[in-house]
Amino acid sequence: MVENPFSDSEGHVARPPATALVIFGASGDLTHRKLIPALFSLAQDNLLPTKFLVLGAARSKLSDDSFREALYPVVKESSRREVTQAAWDAFARNIFYQPLDATCLEDFVLLKARLEALCRCEGEVVNYLYYLAASSTLFGVIATNLKKAGLVEKPGEARSTRLIIEKPFGRDLASALELNRVLRDSFSEEQLYRIDHYLGKETVQNILVFRFANGIFEPLWNHRYIDQIQIAVCESIGVERRASYFDRTGILRDIVQNHLLQIVSLLCIEPPISLNDAHSIRDEKVKVLRSIKRFSQAEVFANTVRGQYTRGYIDGKEVNGYLEEDGVASGSVTETYVAMKLEIDNWRWSGVPIYVRAGKRLPKRITEITIFFKKAPAGLFYGQSARELDQNILTIQVQPNEGISLRISSKPPGPLLRVKPVVMDFAYGEFFGGSSPEAYERLLLDAMRGDSTLFIRDDEIEEAWDLLSPILSAWSSDTPPPLEEYEAGTWGPAVAALLLAPAGHKWRRL
Image 1 (tube, rainbow, N blue to C red):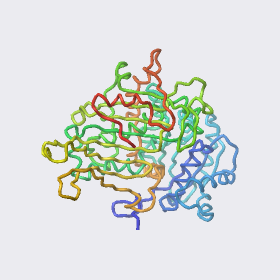
Image 2: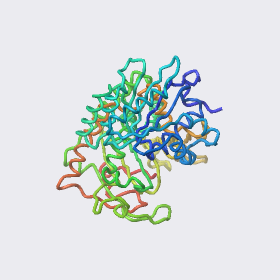
Image 3: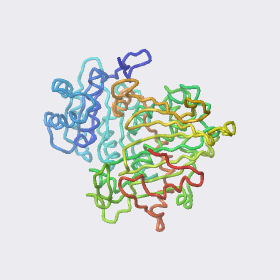
Image 4: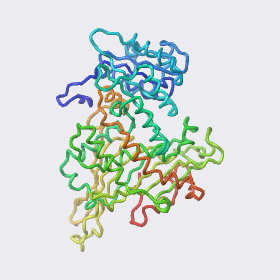
């Protein structure tokens, strides 16, 4: 039997208290393809509260039944669990819909009345959990109107009210600071749950367990033994249906500011007080972000590469270049690829280069963390067939094949003293059986429980934007670094290799 990933220390499933989840932007793709399928899976695993409902809110004029009917085929296609008609009917009876204009306070008054009518029950208070799956331009407006309509209670009150905010959280430091200010006018920081779905992925969560539950690795986790770190977030798809959004955003804001820097902060964290202490973990993540060296304008040119894909081939099929995509502005200089060399200026990591890259229309979809350990001295083997020893390499693959591998050196059978690299592999699916829960399953469940460990605090957001500010400034200046072209289906601009060349490093072959 596969152990339930959401069980407590004794193996008992801990179900959250009664909850009403209100999704703003309920007619959008995120709700249909991610949130409702995640909730359906939680329901099949008996992990939702005993008393639970979803209230979708959006501008579309839909009834409860028409909303449910629109969700069903998409959930059937997207869910990791089989969606039978009986299972869907049992789940869908707890889904409702309320037409709402996010800019209209009167609609929030109606929303409050609808919630109160749906949540009437004897002897149990129903918590309110709000999910902002709407346009980021409406985040502040929705939070303000929730407060004005009396839908926000102070922490410590009988009913908890929490707000989940999807990315993008600002588009630069100034806008992130302003959004934080506006949100805190209506909610306290402890009520705010800024979501990054990468933090819900099993392998990302496992970084802390891997480091701190295995005594063989933590003593080596520093500049004395680690030569370099590489992190890659690669996609084979183009901009798909997100062209208008992506063209205003770019890969630096879309991937690096959140997913990639969150991985860096977890990977390089100092030991927190406890893995059950959300504040302790997030305190240490902020320290990592603050310790990453900020770039001068000259250093931006030397330590970053930006690129944009042109027409090419993915899996043998010809695909458009970025400027040919529907919804992309003519002559756009939005980057679809970025590579950077970072360095953490503290005692643990000083001198260890961290190379990161992210891009679209690369040969395959893969997110991978690679730690290269320093080479062992080869003098012991002089006179034998071994002239130079390979590095030990630890690889953590976040997607698509969740797992961990370690490359070590070993002697192959035979009379000669030879040294060959061998790889020890651990694959989640093979060892634990079944499929891992989707990231949104874990994050939604944690938000219902009030566990903020895997959510991003205000100072984390601000430090990430502060780190990227000089890069964004240099890229938008009158004399920006060149926007390098790369053919779709290749691993990005050839000049990206120059970031690693001074240290004698090369990009890992993925």
